[in-house]
Length: 263
Image (cartoon, rainbow, N blue to C red; front, top):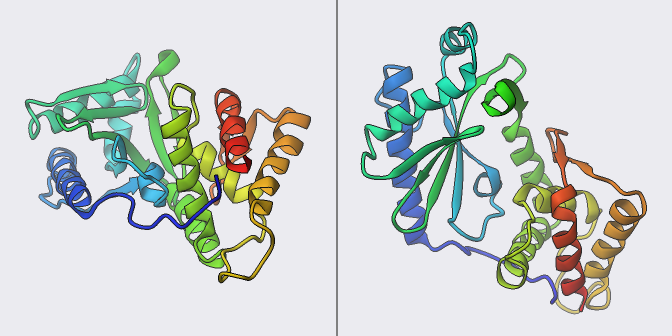
C-alpha cells in the first residue's frame, strides 16, 4: 500500500469543535492558576495533533503551562505531590465540564466527551531553556521533562524539505494501523520519530519523476530491519527534543505496518 498525499484528513467541523473545547479547558485552568480569563495563553497543542500528523480525533493532547509558584507549592508537599497537582487541574476543568468523565491518569488529566473525542491535558512548568517539567504520579511520583515545541519545529522543517512526504507518511502509517492492526500497540510518537529518522532525504516529486513505485516503502522497511531488528533497538530519539522514546511495545506493529506498505 503506497504512500500518498494525506491532506485535511480531519474535517473542518471537527477541528472547530476541538478548538472550542481547547479554549474552554484553557480558560478554566487559566482562571484557577493564573487569575486570567484568556482562552489561549499558556496553552499549546502537543502530541500527534500538535505535530500535525494525526488522522483522527480520538486523543487531543494539550500542554498547559502553570506558574512557577504553583510548582514550588506542590513540590514541597509530603507524599505524591504530582498526584495532588493532577487532582487540582482536574477540579479546575470539572468546573467547566461538570457532566463529562474527567480523571487524573499518570501524567495527564483526561477529559472524555460524549462524541468520542478525548482531551489529554498535561500540566507543566516552563524552564529557562524552553523545556517543560511535568508531573508523573506513577511509582510514588516524580518530575519529568519534555520539549514539544522543538519536536514540532523539527517536523515542520523536515516536512517542508520533503515536499510534504514526512507528514503524509506518518498519516499513512496511522491509517494502516487503525484499519488493519488496531488490536496492536503503535504509538504516534514512535511512528513520527521512526519516519523522521528513516526517510533520509526522500521527498515527493512530480509524476513521472523519481524511482520505481515501492522503492521508498522498501527503504523504510530496510531501515527497520537494520536498526530495529538487527541491532535490537528498544529506544529511539524524538525529533528536535532528542528525548528517548521506549519503542519496545510498538515494534511488532511497526513491522506489520511497514510490511503492509511494501506488499
